[in-house]
Length: 408
Ligand code: GLY
Image 1 (tube, helix red, strand yellow):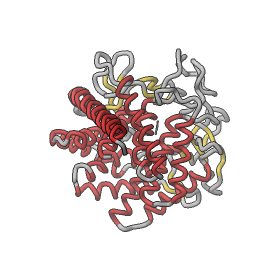
Image 2 (cartoon, rainbow, N blue to C red; image 1 turned 180 degrees about the horizontal axis):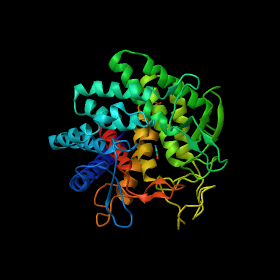
Image 3 (tube, rainbow, N blue to C red; image 1 turned 60 degrees about the horizontal axis):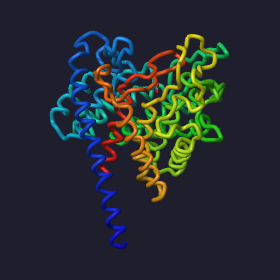
């Protein structure tokens, strides 16, 4: 390398590092304020104690029950803050919020036990060195395993799903999001040596690979199975624009999920699928220039609503989904460790771009949002719920992406 090239390389390397340090510092300052407010204002008793979002009209904190699928993320955010700062205060807070989740180790009312216990107890085990959390994680995996069906080869997501369009009720729905719960199953095998958890995870990943994806590598949201025959009955959406559309967060869960499967198995077919989804995401013609997707890749018309739904709020523009962007940023950093040098560079650069966009244009306006770091996520437009609001899981994957980038 000649001296000039070396000089330019050194300047850009150091300014990239400085930019990242500035971004991390800015996030830590904001999160310190926001999460202290959330801890102060969350109810200390009763059912709804876990900060999830805010009311977009009154700006009040909205908290949810332990059984809510997002209940593990607040503890997870505190673990990420501990990892980012190394400050013991965050560890103490994270332990308190993690241990509120203890009853969920026996919960199997839906499939999200992996999210709930992985983000809380899983991070406590790995980031907080809380070694005794292993038994809680194993018990949680045993609860999740109750939802596995041998004939279908999958973990059932919801107990039933009422279609928007054919009026039928389906009894064995599996959603792409469920890929995220497999990490808990892989971990349970690591802790116990009992391979059955891992086998269930692999079966679920294989059946999902076969049935959830379209030729362009976008995924359906919900695949309905017949428990008697094990066959697919229908492929639909619950939170996307249409059955055949690409709901942004679904694509994000798929990308993150297959990256997890590769982490634990080193099976190339999972890596290939993660790469396929990453390419769908990064090359999509409807991806806005700042790298933050619309809530659904096919929802590009202002006011685009969801088919079959009549209760949808009229939208003035096309909402972005910051949560989907955060999930993908974090997944791409991990994926960049598993692929060849040119893809690795591309994925890391894409993750950095997303994180920078989020930190530049989607951070909280603290006059309105006093509790979370990011704005403009979407819970479910078809359900007219949580449109362009902060969400605890958007923060979680953003913080995780920062932690992962910092570690590189
Ligand atoms: N797993 C539920 C969601 O992404 O909305």
